[in-house]
Length: 211
Image 1: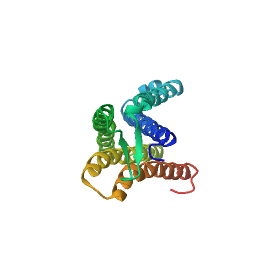
Image 2 (image 1 turned 45 degrees about the vertical axis):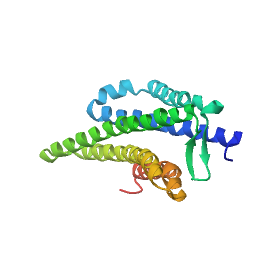
Image 3 (image 1 turned 180 degrees about the horizontal axis):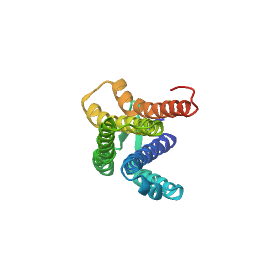
Image 4 (image 1 turned 90 degrees about the vertical axis):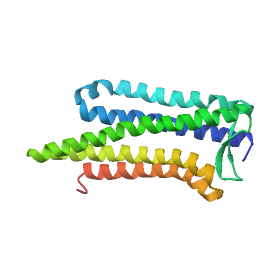
């Protein structure tokens, strides 16, 4: 597809989907932390209506971020010579590569990783407190459920962070096309694959098919 219109439109859609997923991961990470620390506030803040609004905002920003790539001098495409995503070699393309990709990427690392690390700390504190008291069956089940939901969100966020690191570090230092493909494309597949696996695993637990 290369520089064809179809190829550029597919790359723009890929960018929107990626950014929408990352923005959603921020909301998920914050939601998990608030649910653990402020459960009553969580039920108010993350109501069905507000969750829909958060999703619209997350994907809306994804669309806005990649709107400049609609212009020919700022287009974004998949380069088959290097098996990686590239911005056009223009002033606009270089600016987007630095600002909308590099700066954005490391900002997302902070916004996604920070709440997840805080959640790990709080779950560890909760485990330490539970060791001093005797939890009933409902308490133990609730604690295990919190860990399972957090594990799903954390694994997705961690892989997304690996994508950004790999995309900016590995792509700049490695010349092998297959390495570019792994860091730029395959990691995205792994994110969605692990999500579906964990969701299926949690469903089996809820159905009491496994313990």
